[in-house]
Length: 468
Image 1 (spheres, helix red, strand yellow):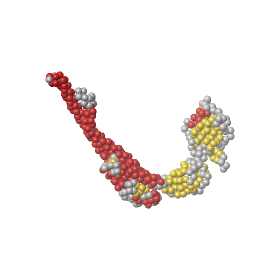
Image 2 (spheres, helix red, strand yellow):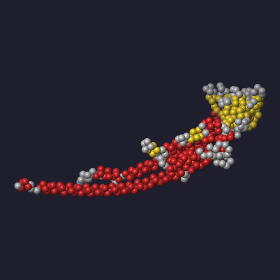
Image 3 (cartoon, helix red, strand yellow):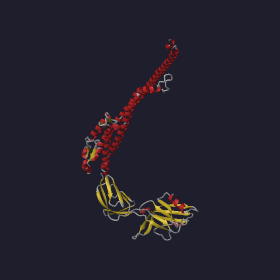
Image 4 (cartoon, rainbow, N blue to C red):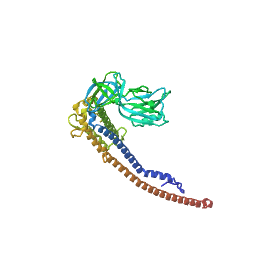
C-alpha cells in the first residue's frame, strides 16, 4: 500500500513513521533476497563446472581413437616440388625422389596481333593423345572421342568461348584482351598425355583449326603440351597421368607441384605429434577443471569470505572422484596401464604436469601399446571410454550436476512462494499500522480541540485579583 500525507489534525509525520516501521518489517524479505542471490551464484558456479567438464569430456573422447596412436607421417625434403601424406598402413622408410616433369593438360591460344574472325560454322574438338619423335615433335594424333560445336551467323568470339564452356567436355575457354587484339585461350581441364585435343573448324570457324602434328597454316599455338608426370623413385622411372600419385608406395599419396632441382628425399615415419597434442589437451582440460573447482570451493580465512560452492558436498566429492579416476590403472592389453607411466603426475595443487621426455619415449615405444591403454583392445574398455562414461554421470540427463541444479531451482521457487506470502502479510501490517496512526491522529486532533476550548473558557472567567 502506498503511503499518503502526514497527519492532518496532529501534524504527526505518519509517512516517516510508517517507512521506518515497514523497513523493520521487511527485513525477512531482504534475507530472502540474500538467500536467492546465494542460490543464483551456486547455479552460475555449477554452470562453470559443467562447461569445464564438457571440455574435459571432449578431450577425453579424442583419446578414444586407436588410429591416433598408430598414425604415420610422410615428409618431403623438397616441399616446393612435392608433398606427401601417409596412411597408418604405410611402412616406415626413406626414398630418393626426383621429378622430371609434372602432368599437365594442353593449352592453346590464338594469334596475339590478329583477332580471329568468327562466323557461322562448326568446330569439332577431338580428344586423345599425340605421338612424338625423339626430338619431342608431334608426329600423329590418336583420337578417343570428339564433340562438335555449331555457331550461327553474327556470332562473336565470346559466343564461341561460351559454346566451348557449355559443351560439357573437359575444356575451359577464356577471352583475353592483350591491348592489341582479343585472344581465345582453350585449356584442357584434365592432366596427362591422354588429355590432348585437336580442333577442326569449318565455315566461319576455319581459323580455329589446330593439330600439333600438322601446324601448317594454323593461327593457334601451344602454350602448354599435354603430358604425363615422369618421376624417379629410388632410381626407378615412373610415368603417371596425374600429379596425385597413390600407387607408387603403399599407403602413401604423393602430390607433385613442380620439377625438382636436385634429388629429393621422401621419408615415411611414425607420426606421434597428433597423439602428443591430444594428451596435452587432455591434461590442460583437467587442469581447468581442477582450477575451477578449487576456486569455487575455496574459503578465504583471512577475509572470512566463502566462494559460491564452499562447503558444497557435490563439488567437493567431484574433484576427488576425478582425481581417483585419473590415477586408476587400466589395462587395455599388454603395455602401460596408467597415466603416470606416460609421464603425467599430480602436483600439490592437484594439477597435472607432463614429463615431456617420458611421454616422447613412451609414444615412440611400440611395446607401450598406448592405443590399447586409451582406446582399449580385445574387449577391454580403455581409459578414455571409462572416464567419458564417468563424466556422463556428471553431465548427462538426470546426472549429478543436473540433479544438484534442480534442487537449487526448487529452493529458489520455495523462496518465491515465501516472498509472495510475506508480501501479503506486509501489506496487511502496513494497513494495520496506518489504521492505528489514523485513529491516533483523530484522537490527538480531538484532544487539541478540547484543549483549545478549555483555554478559551478559562480565559473568560473573572480574574480573582479584579474581584478583590
